Structures are given as C-alpha cells and as structure tokens.
Image 1: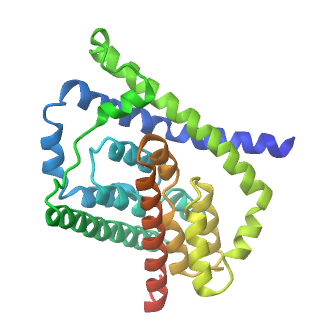
Image 2: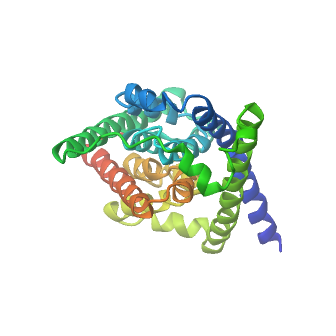
Length: 298
C-alpha cells in the first residue's frame, strides 16, 4: 500500500510540473490559430533556419515542460524536426537541480550544459539541412503546412466555434488541450513509476555499469523512459563516479523527459514518432561513445 501511495504521489508531482508549460504552449498555439492563422506560415519560414539555435539554447533550462511544449509545437508544424531534436537533445530535466544539490562546481555544470546545447544545435541544423535537401531533390515542399487546427480536431475542443472565437474561447480551448494531455501523462506516469519501483533503481544502476559499449546503449534505453526519473538515475550514477561522462551524455541526450510521451499523444503519424525516437536514441548513444572515445572529461 505504501509503495502504491509513493507511486501515485510521484506521478502526480511529475505531471503537475508540466501543467504551466502545457497551458502556456496551448495559449500561444490557440492565439496563432485564432488571431494570426494567415501569417503563421510566414512565421515558420522566417524562423525555421534559426530554430535549432533557439531550441538548443532554450532546452538547457531544467524543466521537463520545454520538451512537452516542443512536441506540441512540432505536431502543429510550428517548428521543424531539427528544432524538435535540438530541444530534446539539450533538455536537462533534473540534472541541474541534482548538480546544484550535490554542490558541483558551477564551471563544470556550465560546461556540461554547453556541450548538450552545442550538440543539440549542431545536430538540429544538420537534420534540417538533410530534410531540406531531400525535399528539394524530390521536388517537394520543405515546409509542412502549419496544422494547429488538426490538434483541435483530435482533442475535440471545438476551437472553431464562432461564439468562442474571442479571448474566452482561446483560454477555454487551451484548457481543454491541457487537461487532456495532463490526464494522458498522469496515467502513463503512474504505470511507468510502478514499473521502475518494481524493477528497482539499483537494478537499473547495475545494468549501466557493465561493458563500455553496453553501458552507453543501456543508458540510451534508460533515457528513452518518458519520465524525469531516467535523468535522475543517470545523473546520480555520474555524480557517484560509477559511469563516465560519455555514458551520462548518452542517457541525458536521449532523455527528453515526457517530450516523447506527449509527441506520441499529439502527433498522428505514429511511424514518424517511432522514427524520431529511434533517431534520438541513435544520436545520443553515438555521441556518448564518441565523447569517451575521444577522451573528453570534465
């Protein structure tokens, strides 16, 4: 009974953390739909080339909500794939609070955050370049149409009703979207927290301390867990000097908090979602292996 109570409390806290970010994101998206739908395509065209830069810089802030917000914006095609991946890679989740609580020197924290942001920015630009080149080679438009309205249809929030087209309608629609996603995340967080409790964090820690290559792969797999607990486990192992910097980066680069969870909920193309998760995993583990192979230490 005590175990179940702890799981419920942790899941509720994790889910509540993203509420402000979800609501603000949906407010912005609803405003774009209701007030500026005619110019959203132009906004995307003007910002898409610098999206990975801003995404990588913003993502280093220690909050799971940014990755959730990015998933919603990508589903609405307000940001590019490169920007989404940049945010996922640079997102720090619980790493910063843990480093601060363990009194890790500020220069070390800044260096790690800078590495994550730089990796996110570079990879984001590369992905957008490849996507643009592919579309150009196949005579396709490189820009997906902004489709915020598709999210409204999916969530049945009746955003397009004329009588609710004003500020009240925008707020109401944003609340409906936020509540739907909150419930979805809460239910899955309950399940995930229960699984982690049953397996045990110590068991996961032992798995990460095997051979170098396997440890990177396992760190990436743990990072895929759509829960802030993943970044907590990986960061604690690094602080205890049980894993290398590269292994930690493999896990933390892949760890996008509940970003992937929200992506699978709001983006209808499930095959695309799976490919994004695989791409994120491959990038994180390969970069982590390269960091250790080169011998980078902090």
